Length: 308
Image 1: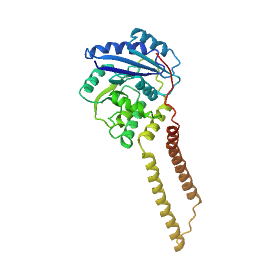
Image 2: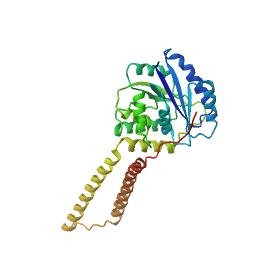
Image 3: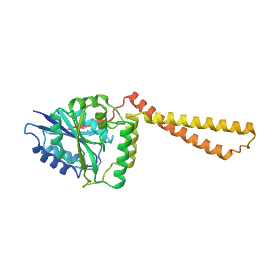
Image 4: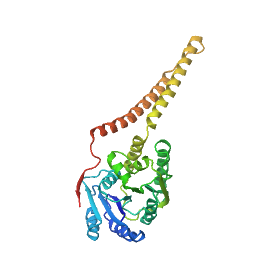
């Protein structure tokens, strides 16, 4: 009998959990009769009543719900890794706790998995978010596709189903400061794609702050691409070439006595520009070096406080 593990990272989702639980249980009837279910609910250090709501869900389905409580807030993607570690199904699904991703897509994803696809992604064709959020998300995905993961589907994804072998490979990596779901894409298995429109959040306020979005953008590039380092090299070559041309120009005009080069203002502008480029370059290199240090220290990406 095939078993599907549904992994849900939860952070300040106390008000959402009862509705999410009801929707997931109702959705079970859309699967083949021989399918068994496991719900791996990861509490990512919530300070509201999320844990109490999860325990109520477990009372309702004691044999199917597993609660993984982390010691603090380690971030959504690290919480997903924790869920992967404790999942035991033949395949797994990662879905948001606020039902912005429609559970009714799961049976179709499951059907693709039974046909042999190890990865099935629901890519966001559109989203019912603000103009700023939609625009930022579109540019983020375009940049990642161009410079890091060219096989990423249009719109990216956070909602997906994957085989146990992929889950075990990601868990074995144990990477920190990364997009755990995009690691599934990085493994380069053939995947099926189901476009959908992401719903607007109906209950509660999103904790996905601008600070977290910027961190994800940086982490994605550092984890999957060396493009920033290549850009530094190209920028250095361009600036070096311009400096050489300007130096030859100064030598020639002085030698020919054409004009007197008065260049204090120009030199200050050039100096400030070069200094800014150097500081930016050091910052980018520092990001890579910091990730290398974290990998060398081998600190876990999350700490599990309790499993219920």
